[in-house]
Length: 367
Ligand SMILES: Cc1cc2nc3c(=O)[nH]c(=O)nc-3n(C[C@H](O)[C@H](O)[C@H](O)COP(=O)(O)OP(=O)(O)OC[C@H]3O[C@@H](n4cnc5c(N)ncnc54)[C@H](O)[C@@H]3O)c2cc1C
Image (cartoon, rainbow, N blue to C red; front, top):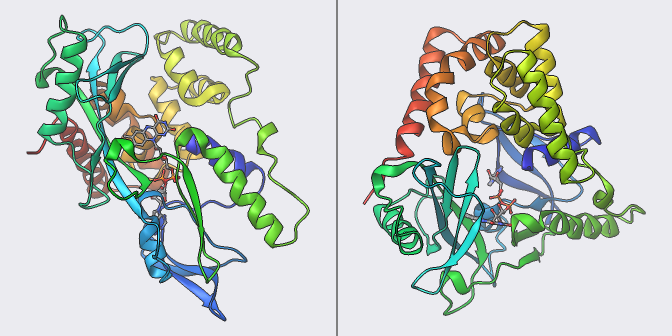
């Protein structure tokens, strides 16, 4: 969803940069007027000038506030959330469920194509931001919660096919436990005019963005206000859920005609919406042998994929939700990406090794 929002913004003229790290803020008369960045793909540094600088760096927000020397008052309180993934065969759930666990928290279990995933934990976190690991304690907590609710499944660590972990950028409240902390978003404006927005939920992303766009618009004396309420997100031009099901059925028919497993229809439409058409056109016109070739072609050309990991993790979620397919699809993905980027054998090996390490980590839990 984040990516489709970015692509929609791009269609309206926004410029978005990937693999670009902000290292420093720049100032004129003590007011922020841009950032110094590094392009992480070639290590080149460059400057971006701006009338307004907005810090929406999630768990990293306070690092930017610290650079701005404005980390005073309210601070982030990071909590870690872990999800475990089981095959549908081992945990055959038909509907999403939300249930109590003995410590008073709530956990959900959600079926998604061939798997059921369960989450989440909510624990304090103060280690390395880039790598919030899944520990055996996290695994134990979730397994106990599931087996308490679904005793007949008797799931063990050996049934886990994948897992992931993330950090919530919550606002610290003295004396509160992780699950008691508010999920409300907050805006901080520093003396240098750096605008920070953090906290909140993904589901509230549009209203959070609206708050900032309207604020900036007013500050800059612009007449326009946020209009995203009426904008359809890229690929999502469906009037209602029935239209989605109809579209999935249309895609199924097209896949059957092209002699592709029709079960892929749901995955393609849930991932790419109406852009599935572009993938199917590419499959047919280029006479591809496998739909994955057309899928990676699409992600290279329309979704700024730079690495194999981008494709299997950030774009398609296969590392989390269909890890078995990663093994069988690596070579297909390499065959297309290699030509696109002119990768030599050393680069191909590097990419594959990194992806396989990530895959192994999905079921390798630390103490
Ligand atoms: C386990 C878990 C479960 C959750 N479940 C839900 C849920 O069910 N529903 C819901 O609504 N929300 C949920 N959330 C919360 C939701 O994911 C977050 O609120 C949301 O992702 C925060 O979005 P954000 O854009 O503020 O930050 P992020 O999504 O973290 O984005 C920040 C971005 O800033 C970039 N960045 C950081 N520093 C720099 C820098 N120096 N230079 C350049 N870029 C930088 C990062 O790379 C990142 O891409 C969950 C969170 C977790 C961890």
